[in-house]
Amino acid sequence: MKKRWIISTTITIALIFLLMISTSKNILEELKLGLDLQGGFEILYKVQDSYEEKNIPEEELVKQTAALISDRIDLLGISEPVITIEDEDRIRIQVPGVKDQEEAREFISIGGNITFRDTDGNLVISSTDFKSVGIEQPSQDLAPAVTIEFGDSIDMRNVTKTYEDQSLTLWLDYVDGETYLKEKAKEDSKILFEGNIEEAWTKNYGMAIAGDFTQKEAELLSKALSTGDLPAPLEEISSQSVSGQLGEQALKNTMVAGIIAMTLIFLFMIWRYRWLGLLSILCMISYLYLAIGIFVFLEGVLTLTGLAAFILGLGIAVDATIITFERLKEIEDGSLSFEKRVLQASNRTFLTIADAHLTTIIAAAGLFVFGVGSVKGFATMLLISIVAGFLTCYALLRLLLYMIGETKVVEWIHNSKS
Image (cartoon, rainbow, N blue to C red; front, side):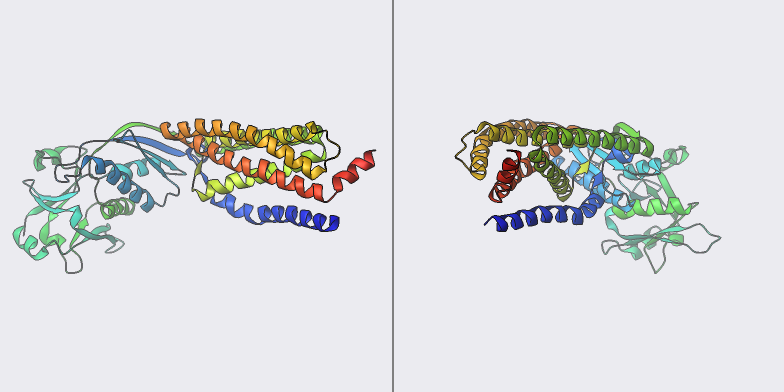
């Protein structure tokens, strides 16, 4: 019996370490870092009333705007953006790891109400009629052209016949009442392109926008046109940027502080509880692994506040082991075996730990429901930490203590001291 339990306990502990070692690298690679750790920028937009042509219900307006912004950010090749809707009419965008912030900002907000119009302001083609958008490079000596293919809703033959030898203009953010002549005279004009229809039409695609575009400008315009236009204007409420160096330094400082804190906790547990402290260290390492694993599985974005909640969760998890050990020391009935004392101590501990965790969960849930931004991120990590801490520093600890008790190793240690 004793030999079987020694083997099963050893295998259990070895499997825990093997699982953590074999999967930790993949988990850390999948871990998403937030703006304050990776650098980037954050913008808070207020969504205005929709353009008259859009006629979108108010409850859907912000959702459609946020979805289109997400599509545009994806086209920029930016990984792990965070887009959240706040106060029903505001959209907060966090874009980490961006090198050219001005380009990204311009691209995100470009082109509400993208339309082709004649010089009298009459609508000819809307962006909803675009089927595909690309870039054509006629030759190295000529500037690139943005090509647009239209869907079946556009009869290009009729458009060509109607507007032959007339000038068509590509507008951004067109508002009723604006005129071609006044807008063209402005330095920052909403008119991106102007050309005759006979020059633009070919058999290969619907229209080619050829101007003094650089390759980068053509790519930016092509991406904006391919995602469609914004359903409503965006008003920038606030913005902030974080340099990559600042985020990297913050991550290093936080990691150093966390390692020091965990080392001190480990040393205290060994000093206070001897070999039981070693078991608690195994459970705490399991907590670190499980909490990060759950966080990655839920596709969370780790921020400085999240790291703070992660370390706080470790402290809460350690409390569970300390309470269990103290209850174990209080049971002085020498007639009971160690494994029975473990069960009694764990049962006494359960209500205390459950009550403490429940109150913390209620507080974290309140922060998650009513908080915004980093507050919600803190609450999310705290909730994950509580669950991971209970599973490792209570449930796993109880299992390991019971298995070690069955090996009779504890009795051997006690007899050796005697």
